[in-house]
Length: 281
Ligand code: NAD
Image (cartoon, rainbow, N blue to C red; front, top):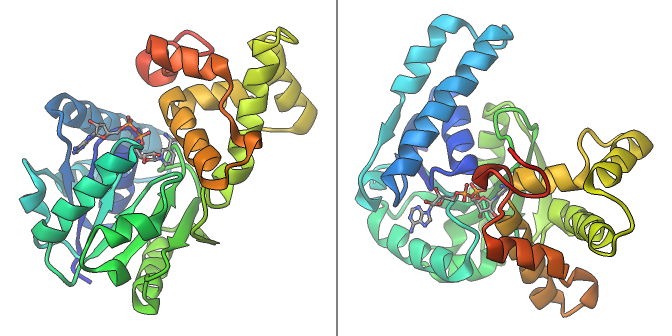
């Protein structure tokens, strides 16, 4: 596979994915439809690399070279020569299907097209392309430079060769893979989202404050963060989108999003990224 990796979408996940590939000596091409997002992403990557250097995790003198391996491209044609493109745009099915149709046209036919979707069927995204055998889910966790896991999801048509290449890449990134079949929410969100949603119901029903809910789960079950703080970190729009995909996908009321979550997203309270969610930032 070519050493060039495209990252489509420079939000919180896209910047982390660009960061880890550049750190492992891949040439990264980064694109976002909003130039302001690119600027923010590059600043975030620089800040996070600085933090890693301060902690002694990487040599400080390696930072400029890592940053130098990230090139911003102005449209999808900038991904033409990539061996792999990872899509990390907003969690919206119509948008992702459209992006994969365009990626399929823009990127050399031998390249693997991966999606970081949290919940949208890989099989459906793959079917929007003429290379469904080369489409796969690479679901990184947030924050990408810190979290060890990559969920790898095979669509119905994903080939063994594609899967083996991606498994090798995960190892080269120094991360660990968990393999999931392609059903809504895969492994991690299938288990995590109902818990977050239930925590929001506990708040909605006036049973406890956000602080006490999070305290309960942190100190009572040894979670490193409470479910509401985690929801703020993930982004409440993303949480709602994932729950909606699982609700629609399984037709099971256990995945119905809490009305308070819907209301907060309608208000633009999206969590940390917008400055306000269950907490103020
Ligand atoms: P985000 O809102 O931070 O970033 C999304 C980015 O996509 C934005 O910068 C936006 O400008 C860009 N975008 C939107 N339309 C685009 C287009 N047409 N072309 C190019 N860029 C476009 O969201 P995020 O949290 O980074 O999530 C991105 C993906 O990663 C989603 O599929 C999400 O489900 C998944 N994911 C999120 C988390 C999390 O904790 N936030 C964890 C794992 C996976």
